[in-house]
Amino acid sequence: MKVIDLTHAITPEMPVYPGTEPPRFEAANTYEKDGFKETRITMFTHTGTHMDPPAHLYAHRTTLDAFPPEQFIGKALVVDCRALACGEAITMEHLRPYGEKADAADFLLFCLGWDKKWGSEDYFGDYPCIDDAVLDHILNGSYKGIGFDVIGLDPIADVNLTRHKRLFAEKDIVNIENLCRLEQCGPELFWFSCFPLKIENCDGSPIRAVAWFED
Image 1 (spheres, one colour):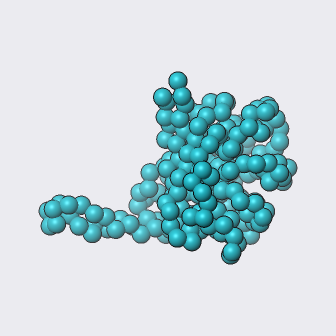
Image 2: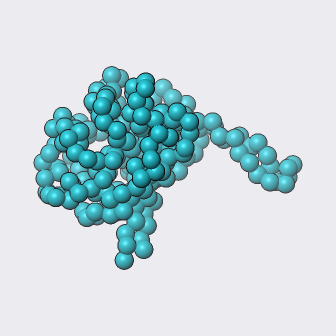
């Protein structure tokens, strides 16, 4: 079985969304003093490769811990959008070549190749985003989640989070950001899991996103 890790490692130096703080790692216990190692980690719930639920934007909407575990596993399809230039839109023309596979997927994962900019200022640039027609398609479908190898569903300059609000207003779905290595998954459906931490009243969580391919 082939397995691909689609997750960025969490480090103190990693990129974080503008206005948030990077993770802090502190030695709580050490081998030398305590005979074992334990680390205190302080970070935001939307750090690194992470997942948003509807409760990220709306009070009284679904939190991550309220979803059943099957929400976080299923068949995924990578939509290759790497030919797009900065600021161009992801349109239905990028979905149509995949035909019925796009409708059969539980997760649509959009590959911009933006993970290659991870760790640089360019990562916070004008990455392509889905347009209204693609968002309508997602809202009208039966998808468990969508995902991107960029830092946001909305453009970095959209402080109103317009796409987030439309996605989560009424639909129970998850949004995944800061994926990596999506180009390694190919154009066919594959198994995908993206389990978050089970935190009470959870508005978001880092995940370990994994693709696997049965022989």
